[in-house]
Image 1 (tube, each protein chain N blue to C red):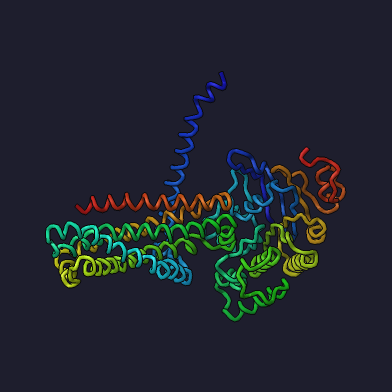
Image 2: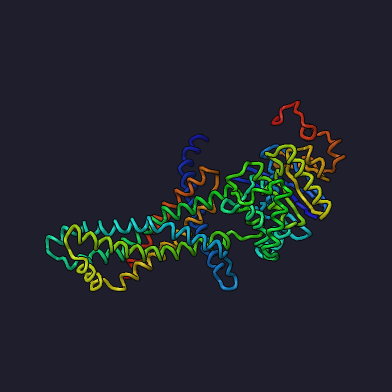
Length: 265
Length: 247
């Protein structure tokens, strides 16, 4: 009798565990966001200058090469993909518009966001997670230093600022990649490509992508810090936290992309 | 005076500490001993406010540690130094910056004075030449000593040491114990020392408590522990095993 009851209850146990897990993660994300916001109030403003500079360099400057290469290739691929149809209809004047519109509004922020979450977000979670499992976070607290002000705020600011700047640089690099490819593969003059971009792509398209960049930077920062600070269980736990952080960031990027795109229509 | 009053704490439904009560008079050093996994480190973290207990309270100088706001807790922690069991050195700082970190955060000393203090601290732990190295370049024993220097650099009146001599050779262990004793005598620090080095803590502690499976099974001064007839306490104190400890 008891074993039948146990068998009946087992699936519910799994559901309960899943519910607890998600409630903990969502609650934790909300609490972390609230604590960051409180830290940003003028009378509670607390963050470490040198640590912020260190993070700006680590997050931004070190990510630049990989973002530049990715963006250059993305721009080139966009032109190659659209090249077939452009040649078919002879609409060479629309090549710059097609590439520029999609790069600035969608492909640029999404590609760079995913690269950023894989490189910077994962690194951030691993660093904070290792600090957590080796008691370094507790050591900070024991020294009367708030880990939010000292560790999270610099990372949070650095990730938002650098995500924004990397998308600006990445967009430009992608357009350069597109222009070079259009000249070399399709024989479309770079000046025509640039004219098409300047004429048909509006500032709105650029701002739309930059809003996404800030939103993605915000999400990656919060998610990577949350999973890092809540790491448990040694090296295995750090691996799990990094995995959860990258998956969570990727999902957040697409959900936010959908919401922002929908809201701007 | 530090008072631990009826503290209980569970982890994943399993009780780790059960109704633990201890008093540590001001200016004394309590030696906390017990088997691995008995709950010693957790108790230390609860005492200094890093972990909240499920029930009970901890007061330091009459102030309930777990009822303090963030600012008051930070003020209290400026008066506390803690040496962690697994060093907890900051990976991204070199040794000198690790030791200087508490002083820089306090913000009351200039860089020159901080550098002087760090130099003296490194000399005291016989590691004068490693200031520029990073924690991942050090042996376990060296990390322990650097962690010790960081814990005491602010000269706090309350100190918690979690196994200060684990992984150290007998000469350095003895030197660390002498430093602990000197600090207590010169500055009247109140301390809790977790250690498995019974010979060492015999020399530096005024009171002893033994914790087993989350419960205090002995609390008293040196005479009392010498006369104690609880088998596990006797085995620990005298360093022998004639019985199954798990029994």
